[in-house]
Length: 259
Image 1 (cartoon, one colour):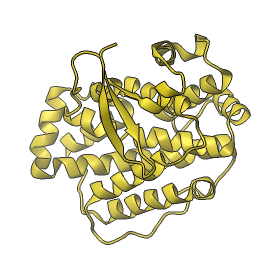
Image 2 (cartoon, helix red, strand yellow):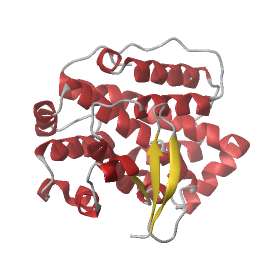
Image 3 (spheres, helix red, strand yellow):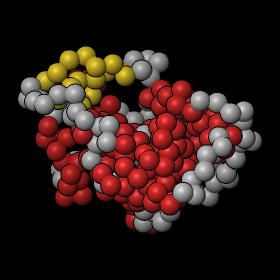
Image 4 (cartoon, one colour):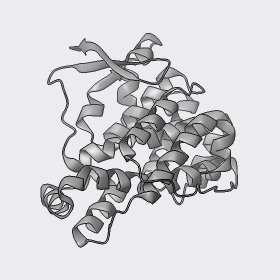
């Protein structure tokens, strides 16, 4: 992974390295046309994975569907993260870990997500705005139906949460606008971050915050697995679920808010 990620978020970078090493050790064939089409749409716009595409993918992968979808996620976001960080903070060196022993991938992805959740350079409100922006871009029903207790306790409300949909024209602070613009770029144009977006992020965010933001987008994008497999149904039909994140990075549902 990027040396900048190792510099500013070493534990999360090591966890991401472990994910990548395990992924490269997996003997997974992505050349089947149905799998290739699924993977391409997963990377471009996961919300457009339709029932027919999903059915063909499941027929091609059978009982390994979840594992293959995880591999597609890693292949999708491993390069994005390092390139986006380098676009904002300057050229970086990629350190590709040696392939590891074959291991179950999902527990390592969960370890990575917990390490990212433990980062604290971004305040709780901005962290939640970034999460919600990604959830809405990927059209994850589960993620859009949740709200962070930490963000609510820090003063955020539906006005701020709604502003993520039109952040450039909103009354959000400049740092939040810069962060959300970078979030969009990582999601939609990761290999060509617009220079004004990179410049605004560098102006309004510290290097630690830039790295954390990109890692947050990467962690949150694991929801693409559920969206692609049609497993992202919200747990509530009215209001939102409230969640908290503990010191170890574990997410816990703590209640509901009817709003």
